[in-house]
Length: 209
Image (cartoon, rainbow, N blue to C red; front, side, top):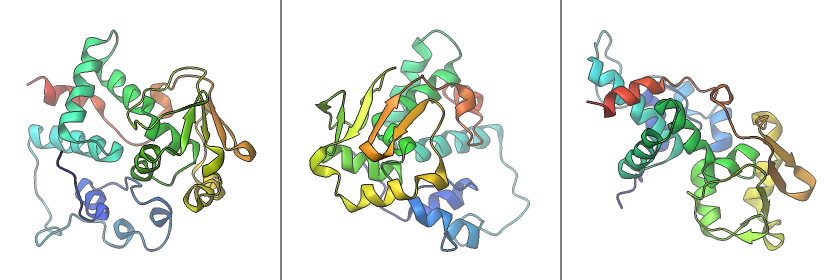
């Protein structure tokens, strides 16, 4: 599977939005987006460029895809699954992305970014309901208990992230027991829980062409 290996700061600049892909660095004065808030490349500072409807829809899809760290194939599969469900397709899509285990441990503050979350999940650092789960796309459910394995509680990356969780905050649908390195899914997320500026209807329009 193709995997992006370049600078993730370029992705934020390309989407003209801070996507918080580098953890603590995004909150510091080293953030590349804060220093150079224009698209990367030779013509990044050109003004007055107009985007077509397709271009606007594409940029919205790319923004969400990059935010959650998915490939095009993975993202399209999530969209198809959301389209089959009852309800509004765009909201269904965002909720499915929020249910992913790598996203939930990021929301709980166990990791600094979703990319770090995927890596640590694959390396068997987390339990769900007492069972080892090493699949980042595992879909959490109401009442699930996510915790750091006892052998992994001394991992520096997890400890540093938990120390910084106050700055980022934990969503209301999750309950963090910091002292026990444990989180509980006390409710399922709703659209209002996603505070990033996302226009999911543009993604639906793009894939409906």
